[in-house]
Image (cartoon, rainbow, N blue to C red; front, top):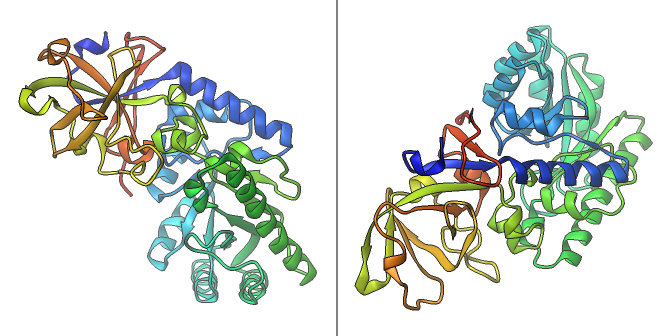
Length: 377
């Protein structure tokens, strides 16, 4: 089958670019002497995860327990659930662990540590737990010098129902860095924060076997990960326009796109109308605050080559509006009704979440495979 034959909108994955992206990250972290624990929240596909794990340990990061269920069902047992645990999820985690999944959880406060310990005691369960560290003020986590670090560590270590497995952080503020130098500095800040926490725990007589960092920008540009045991990253598999906008990749590295079809025009406005709106692309406008605003996505021809100056400037639920970036005149005759176009996304995670399968190509338009993907919690 060829892309031109598909009903649109649909999700396209270029396996050639995917393989290149995976190999680049794997090689970089190997040189730094640190393990890669891929984050599969973007992929949500066993086929993609298996490629990401090739040549390394079968250890993954997830952001939902549905992800944990799906990948465990395919034989992956070493799973870090990297969102702060809430009490209403502990029964689910306990069930996964009873069935043989080594699911570790994270938290960042004494109350959660106590509740996990109490639940484990009641269930006859011992939960492995990592303490989440705030390395950049971006969202959750314990400050590296906070007394709470040791308090949480003691609760987890002294309870027979919990295991203090280590510390972890996510430098989410790296997405806001506008130069490579700033990303490198953020990578050092991220590393220093968790290594400092590991040192503080050790000084207090507490174990910290895992020291985990993770974001695609910092993983890409880290130059020294001394003291770190593993890196978690996910969007590096596909990349997107936000990553291109902060020089983490090039537009040519973006492996994910949405296939759309021209359904009409508004000649007086210089618009091409397609059947891929925000339900296909997502509402994410992550490039709006960057140096180059890419609208809802960069427009490519059916083979995936960017068409100079065209972006999706606006989106309704099922309609995408394509125009020249600079508002200039557009030769609409070049894009008759029925023309297939591919749109590169701002945020691969958000766009992927709108679709239930990947149509896999290898640099061209021939569909070589269809890989299922899932969504939800």
